[in-house]
Amino acid sequence: IRDSIKVMQNYFELFDLETSFFVDDEALNKAYQAQVTRLHPDNFATKSQAEKLQALQSTSLLNSAYTALKTPLNRASYLLNLEDINPFDEKDTNMDASFLVSQIELREQLEDIKELQDSKALDNFIERVQDFINDNVASISEAFRQSGDLQEIKKLVRELKFYEQLNKEANRLMDEWL
Picture 1 (cartoon, rainbow, N blue to C red):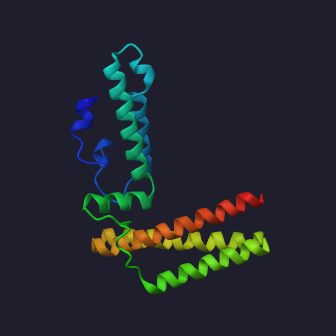
Picture 2 (cartoon, rainbow, N blue to C red; picture 1 turned 180 degrees about the vertical axis):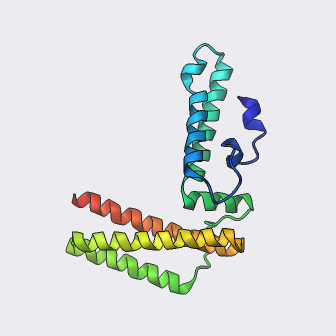
């Protein structure tokens, strides 16, 4: 177990994937399942404590790697981190003013919908935010494909995180109403 984990340079290699934003989700899922199966505790029932512990640590690493690669937001963030760019550095507060204004407006709209308890408006709002997410992921894809401009990708990743959080809040509200 230790040898296969030691030589790994990044999470993509753990799953035998190319280090890229463009990941075949099915290939990632299959590789993850294969690794999880290989490291299942039943396979180590008769092994030493050290081997059991190593399998447990490897499983933890696998789970972290899978989480980092399975969504566009996490994958783009991970790729930036590989380049020593933290997209969520708290000291870096530079954001596009028009984007921030649009976020404030979206949050106000969500508050209004919440006060009115308008489920139809909430459905439409969730759909609109999902469109923003899809457009943003497409922009990130394009930036990785065309320019590789890491600062532009960082800006887009930060925006995507805002949209993802807003989407989560809106869906949580919908769940409360159901």
